[in-house]
Image (cartoon, rainbow over all chains, first blue to last red; front, side, top):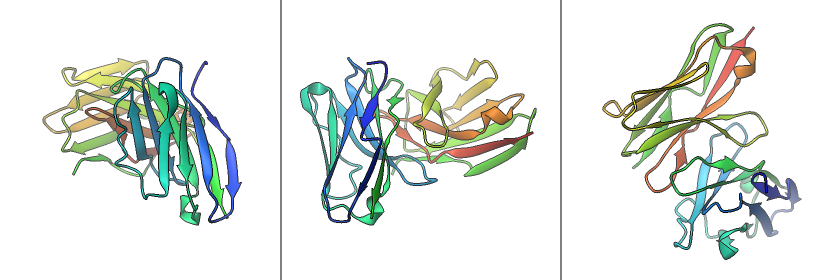
Amino acid sequence: GAGVSQSPSNKVTEKGKDVELRCDPISGHTALYWYRQSLGQGLEFLIYFQGNSAPDKSGLPSDRFSAERTGGSVSTLTIQRTQQEDSAVYLCASSSNARETQYFGPGTRLLVL
Amino acid sequence: SQKIEQNSEALNIQEGKTATLTCNYTNYSPAYLQWYRQDPGRGPVFLLLIRENEKEKRKERLKVTFDTTLKQSLFHITASQPADSATYLCSMGDNDMRFGAGTRLTVKP
């Protein structure tokens, strides 16, 4: 594809429900990142995938958060038992390798009621 | 612990002036550093990359410096325009890339 795509663009859910956010990186990019951005705040690193290596999960805020990347391409970020403080924009980025420029998707705006 | 600090949350300047944004880091030895622009409701967009052996990099009205002794990068926008108003983020890392919190620049006409 032409760029990184994310779906859904907006998600409203009730507290306690599980949500899945999807990221389609640029074809051929081996590195994929998930970030969270609360209103007016900076990017908070969540998780990083590089090729077939074990992901760097050091930014995940709790065990309710998990992510996987199937076949080295599409990634899904799952938030279980959502809380109101999970409300934020979730951004995905990909790059051709770990140290190259990151290309960002448009984000998924999550609102937990 | 590793930290990336950008000098201020917000910077307001008059059109035509030079905007200077600062990025300081600790406990990193980055091979290079990047600057991104983020507009409201959008993801960040790459602007410039500067390597550790480069003192300065320019692109049109943008200039970036990188001082590995001071552990600091400066980002300049000359002849600023209202369209330059956005949040600017610096990014660096070793095996991956992390971001500073950003500086929100407002250029007033």
